[in-house]
Amino acid sequence: MADEKKTFNIFVTGGSESVGLATVKALLRNGHSVIAQASDADGALAIRRAGALPVYPNLSREGEILSVLRMADVDIVVHAAPQTFGGVPQSDFDFAGHVEWLPEITNTVVQAAGKNEVDKIVSISFGFMQDAEGSEYTAMQEAEAAVLDGGIDGYVVRAGYIYGGNNYSTEMVADLLRNTEAIYKGTHNASWIHEDDLAEAIVALVEAESDGDTLAEIINVADDTPQSPNDFATQLGEVLGFQTVNFASAGFMVRLRGETMRDKLLKREVVLDTTTIKEKYGWQPQHTDATSGLDATLLMWRMAEATDVTEFYREYEDKAAEAIEALKSGQPIAELPEETKAEEKPAAKPAAEEKPAAAKPAAPPASDGPAPWNEDEAKKEERRQRALARKKARAEKRASGG
Image (cartoon, rainbow, N blue to C red; front, side):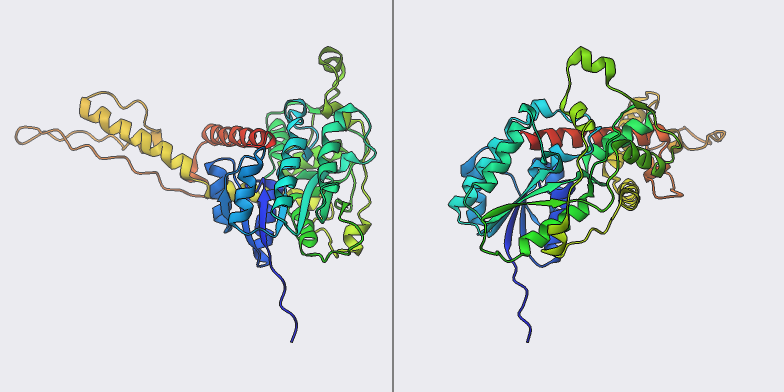
């Protein structure tokens, strides 16, 4: 009789979005018990829907993390919170405003993991750390060193640029394309990885037996097709239905504000060798290139748009309540959507004394498709922008250890 597959109690930081959430789902599919860090109610809901338990430790406080590890008797820690720094390089993520927190939260997570005597830690890092030189990389190098020198068996996973349907940087660049804004130019080849494929690589490392040779090592993870940021943005534009993409060089802005981390990354060629993760750990990417991965990304966005109706119906309920109050007070109903107004009919002459009709809340119009209420494009765009703003706020909060 074959031995049953060993399962673990696992804590995932940054578990509510992108690679973190994909890792939560992949671990659960493999039978592991998972608790995951959430930074707000939306993140907690995403974790609960995946089937894991959300927890709320501040990653800069060792005591809070240690309490979580002891509560769930955690065997393995997946440190996915750094994922925010490794997204699509043309995004507007503020490296300078948040990177100082990265070594602090990573060191704190490692220290708490050590005190709880966990078996292993798997921490996300970035492919662009390969051959990185310059003070702008110091904080990220310190974060890697915290894991490599932490005395715990594990891995630093240097990933290609991360993209996917739950990835903030991907949504941000898509938003620039939808608004026909210029995308920063990057012509050098780089490695890429879909969030789901990176999650599967992390699971492979979680489940791998220790070879006993080294406590922690660096593992590269990327798809099979390096390409330039320009090519990636062009493919993203194509799946969104745009034939052309406007590219712009930083040029004058660099001279005005100085060179940012984004400017430096877009000038670098970073192609990763993924032989070890494939041959030693048996991992292969499902999305071997960005074409396949972006198709999956667009499908996820469409599914989310079709099913995430909570906010829209909350708005409808508010407007219906306002309309009822307006009817009671005799005020005009100016705020109801046109679709909810009943067709006007000539009033019949009253046989007796006319009594005011009782007010009835308007019902949602019938839908001919998956979008809630068949909302018009302006409404849809407003809802999408609010969701993007919330996701950006969560990404920045996670980057600061919240």
